Length: 175
Image: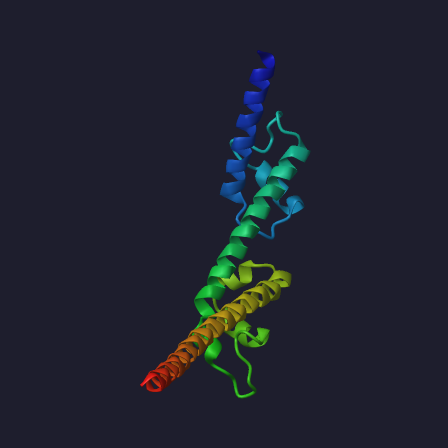
């Protein structure tokens, strides 16, 4: 019975501390050493709970930070999809650069949006590169499938006409 009570208290303490993290920690680049004093000033005492030790709180903190970073990455990918459209990709600069083959060109369009700065600097270009490669691959496969349809249609027409020629030739032979 006592084990059940301890388990319930621990679960409540975890939930309470997670709520504190959601309320106070909004920056995905925050550090534990900077944030711990801010959390300890909580008037409800959710960061000074005897059920959770410092290691537990730090682990919960880093889980929260990871979730914030993942949300920022998701938002950055949405930004890429909004800004780097196929229309934007078709526009070339004087030196032949597009938003899909030049990070500096893409960056100029992305930078004004607040979602750009929320992603860690080291991750931005890699996320852009992955998005650009996917978009180029989709464009190529779309272009290839259109070409295949065009080729198939032309091929079928030429086969049909040769078939017609053969049939008409046969009919003349029978006469």
